[in-house]
Image (tube, rainbow, N blue to C red; front, top):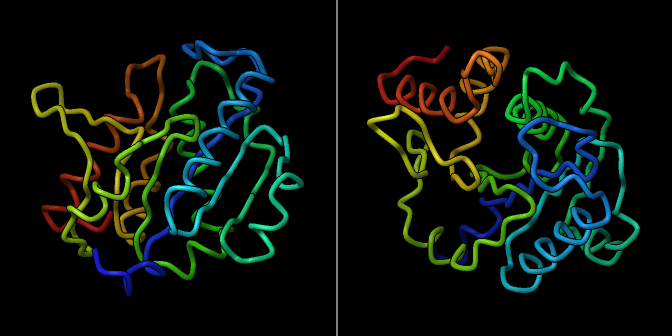
Length: 199
């Protein structure tokens, strides 16, 4: 990836500091989760030069800790109240709501073309190498696919922002109780895009 692509790419870190008893969420401790998110965010600020959107859905604002990076235009912190939906829908539904909110409200995403979505507590140490290995175009999504299971690994994927309306238009299908997981809907959306469907 050449340096002139730097402004075309934004890292999107999704976060839920207070899971509020969300099912299938192993770490429930708020302070521990906050610490993990801060460690991850610090890694990407230190080890990459990409602009970063950190978006959190339980109304816990940590932007006061990053005023320098925010004022320099390197970081955008968004916090909203988006974790009060029915619990049976599962955390994947909440993840989709986070992506939808970011897509609508983020100024950095509006200024960029490609979104590198990363689950906020995960440190992808080779993130630069992964981005550099991609031949980015509007009709490609880079992620790990499970073709047999028809699912994806969703903690990290790269897509043009035009992919998001297609995927997010199906967000209401996500329901952990019905075993229609975020990863399954993401997989289906990728294949719909490759077949040329827009909705």
